[in-house]
Structures are given as structure tokens and as C-alpha cells.
Length: 79
Image (cartoon, rainbow, N blue to C red):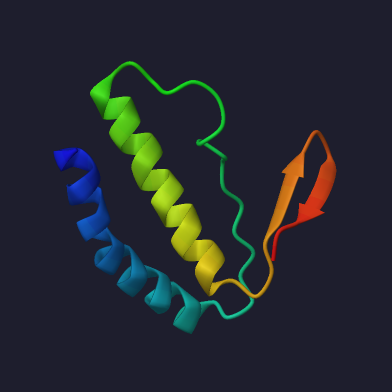
């Protein structure tokens, strides 16, 4: 639980970083791995990484004009 609380606190840091990226690259295309599907990792470090990447992806999606999920070459518009 403490790791999740700590990673939530990183949200402000991530948001500031995303804002600085958006100011530099207004028409950026971001490609990211989906880490939330599948088994939860056994190792605490891997779980923290998975949580951090998932939160970053959510913040990126929140700031994005459009969001596409591509699986096996098939695109699905999420936003």
C-alpha cells in the first residue's frame, strides 16, 4: 500500500514533465508499452515499475488529443 501511495505522489512530478514535453512537442506521437494486462509480477520492484508506467500512461492519455490502442495490428480508438 505504501508503494502505491508513493507512486500516486509522483503524479504531480509526471504532470509537470508531461506539460514541459507538450510545450516543446505539440504534435508528438507517443508510443508506449501496455503493462497492465496479464499477470501481476511477483517481484516488488517489477510491480512498482508496472504501477508507475500505468500511471504515466494514464496521465499521457489525459493530456492527449486522441488515444489509440493497437493490438495484433488492429487499432482501437479509446479517445
